[in-house]
Amino acid sequence: MSRHYRDEARQTYRDIKRRGSRDLERARHRADDMSHELAEHAEEAWRETDNYVRRNAWSSIGVAALAGFALGFFTGRR
Image (cartoon, rainbow, N blue to C red; front, top):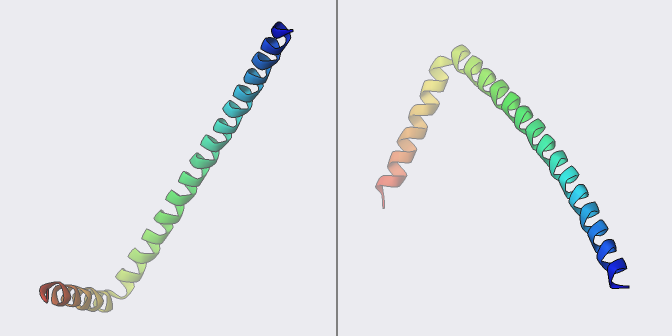
């Protein structure tokens, strides 16, 4: 009787281990796909930002200067 339970427990362990390995592999693939997708979006955002700054150089310089001034103003007032 105990041998039957032991064999059943081993089989259950193997099944759980097999499912866990399969699920882990799926998660790895999903994370890899998401990583590539995120990299593509970041590259696209970089290109769009670069194009915008090149088209509107003086506006971009003004915004950056204003942001720098505001940051310096608020951090200097501690």
